[in-house]
Image 1 (cartoon, rainbow, N blue to C red):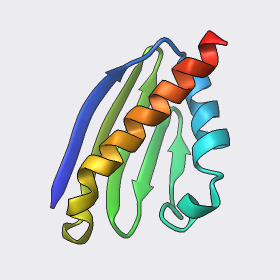
Image 2: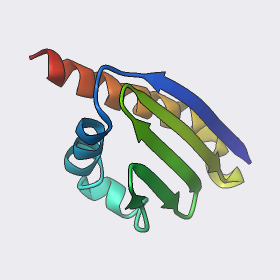
Image 3: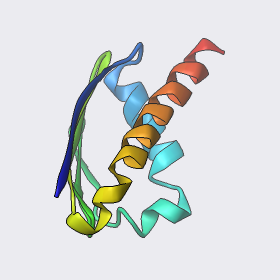
Length: 97
């Protein structure tokens, strides 16, 4: 089992980031089957999926990722981390426009 524990600094509020995740990530058809049980409790997104279990906590100017990747998906850990980084970059780029 692999684990991703990272903290990212952003220029966005927790609400802006939550809106971005809801509108640009969770509604993507290809991710809905991978994250069928992702749910928000306040500003924390809890994920309990087949290959990924953990949370993504949002606060103003910060994202804390703490997820376990199953053994079967462990080889995708770097790609998952890159996807998270890319999402944060997209959010920040959208704010600059």
